[in-house]
Amino acid sequence: MPETKILLSEKDIPKQWYNIVPDMPNPAAPPLHPVTQKPVGPDDLSAIFPMALIEQEVSTQRWIDIPEEVLEIYSLWRPSPLFRAKRLEAALKTPARIYYKYEGVSPAGSHKPNTAIPQAYYNKAAGIKRIATETGAGQWGASMALAGCLFGLEVTVYMVKVSYGQKPYRRSQMQTWGAKVYASPSDLTNSGRKALEADPNNMGSLGLAISEAVEDAATHADTNYALGSVLNHVLLHQTVAGLEAKKQLAIAGEYPDIIIGCCGGGSNFGGIAFPFLADKSAGKKVRAIAVEPSSCPTLTKGEFRYDFGDTAGLTPLMRMYTLGHDFMPPGIHAGGLRYHGDSQLVSQLLKDGVIEARAYPQLTCFEAALTFAKTEAIIPAPESSHAIRAVIDEALVCKEEGKEKCILFNLSGHGYLDLAAYDDYLAGKLVDFNYPDSSIKESLAKLPVIK
Image (cartoon, rainbow, N blue to C red; front, side, top):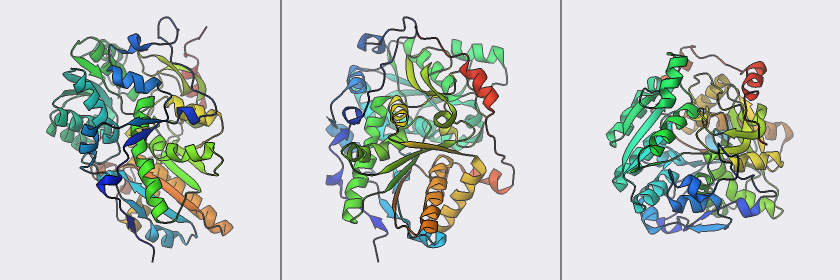
């Protein structure tokens, strides 16, 4: 019988992060200054980021060393296990071999500490006292709260209001680690007050919460901003998961035909897929599928355009797939996937046909999550259920075609602090929402015109 779980020792934690930039067919376009529309330089970013992260953001080096202090904290949970989903395979009666990298073993319960820890480390080394950040479902906010606690940094989190109400225990998790958490939009920033004046019942979005956190950081000298996805350095840090998975699959004598990850801003998908896309650039055949909600269909219905990363237009303009920076997605339970844009790297790879993208409504994703929980025993985060839906569909295609493919996916986190979402699903309270094309068109019409 094949091993159910493939484990590595602490000495196998990657000592370097993998940077996909030198292996891309085409480079991502440079970010532009929100006012001048000229390419941003280090000085433009130094008000909210430490120089070490700015250097990583623009680096073209293939490998970047992981600091010893970061590796020491990584060892609290890394290497994470790789599981063979034998019981799921049997339930589906598929010839496909399904493996999942389980990032829910981190103290925060998700993949997000992979970047929160190094971001806190570099900010501490730069003399920063406080971090301002945003969070959707709360996984990133919890991870940054944990990182701040471990490095002695104060952390302020602007949590999207709909998730602030839906996921109270994520908020408790952040507060346990010492973070201050505010529902966004709040009355603490100009961005928040403006949004509340326009709509007192505004339920918030990641773009709006980013605006509040960026404004907070830019107006306090002792404070920097930290982002949990989208940016190049964030996806760089997440590659520890894919690099470990490569070693673990090699132990099993496997190599994936298909790699799947849920995708909101791109960190989870990039973390698992990018190390394998290095092989694809060298001629290896492998498919990589980014999966998003149909209620926030950035990659599948957005346009590849320059747009702000936040609602208020405070961030640099990035060329990415976007639904428009003032896009206000519905309050689905997969709060971590409710972002109007996407990583420039993921967007460029999709534009060039290196990766694929698909979107699912939430009911079929929760159906897949229950199938996974009943076979593999782990209740997945709502975000990860999107990846599971795609895995099951691909495994059923293998069954129909009689093909024995190897499928790898990233189980980015557990759902034990998201049980209210499962309550709503089991009670029949959830509904699907496919965002109307007319609303997307209206939002896209407001994109900035780049001269």
